[in-house]
Length: 495
Ligand SMILES: Nc1ncnc2c1ncn2[C@@H]1O[C@H](COP(=O)(O)OP(=O)(O)OP(=O)(O)O)[C@@H](O)[C@H]1O
Ligand SMILES: [Mg+2]
Image (tube, rainbow, N blue to C red; front, side, top):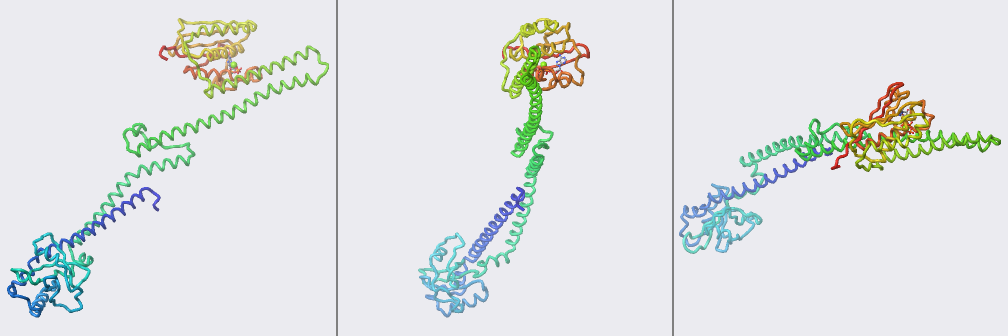
């Protein structure tokens, strides 16, 4: 029942208000009792003296016990709220009008009486009650005789029973009843106001808890924002603790969802990779094994045939080597282990080196390799080895898809971002359906699946250019020019 914060706060408030109410009530009762005692003593201050004066007793030597008893009896009949006693100088009760067994003490303390007679007005001054050994009550007192050294004292206990019983006091006092009702009313109003305020405060917490609960149930995939249309940062700057909590949670949830998504993506990529790698490794391995087996088992093969088989086996092992090293390179790039070591770079020189590298192969294929540049090519910011790899991959592809007599052109041109490099070659071209897949790892055009490549070259190119902050593009005409382009940012001195 008390699981919600709201219920707990409400219970605490209720207990607090009730405690306060009870404390206030008790204090009020106590103060009223004191106040009534004070009033009674103040109003009846001269009662004892008046009694002596009215009865004309003021001038006798000693009061006669019988005489005073008769007076006491008269007065106490008129006003039953008083009890009159005659004391000697030491406080011993000399005369009283009451059944003998009702008197519980024979002597009263003189100190409060002396205080009273000495003019101390800090009322109520409480004196002993002869009828109750434990209680003390307000009183009026007068010395006898009124003038001269006192020989006896008239001691009047006021309002004997009325203030002792709190219940009776509460029952009889209209003031106390009204103030008790006011306290109870105050508690109720305070409780309602508190509950409303707590509701306002906990409503947002309640919402946040709901959001988190739904987020948890969705397996950390779906989340409705707490901040809504407001920016989380704005809430963090301007909101209270709950807002900061909500906005922070918004950010956290966003990051968790992105992480989960990226983990899932990475996982599926990894699974694809393993499947593709095992497939791509198995094919050349099987072929290599097949030819070597034939060589081992078949005796009497002609030398020319043996050489042919060995050449094929060698080709497959080359393909394997290339596949493994490309895979290694790509996984290093993707794990961000290989970061570009950037420096100022002249792309034109890089292109010339690459052309030099491929010159022999191009000649053998009967293909012309050329560089074309428009305007002055500025320095770019890049990693020489990595960008060299990009160019080599593209030129390798271009040579592979250019028929004899074709011309492969490396075009260099300054652009908005930096420098654009394109490798263009004539050939069969790439269909638009294939074009969207060329950057994917392991993608090869269907007619090439059995060829030399692994389908990783352009995936490596893409990763390298991304690491450089450059862009990539490709265009291809059927039986026309295919052009692969990339841009590299300019070199700036303050990089
Ligand atoms: N210049 C081009 N002309 C036509 N098709 C191309 C050209 N360059 C790439 N392609 C197509 O894109 C595919 C992917 O190229 P990528 O360089 O990634 O792999 P690959 O060259 O087959 O193998 P690898 O580069 O790993 O040895 C190629 O298989 C080919 O189908
Ligand atoms: Mg390639």
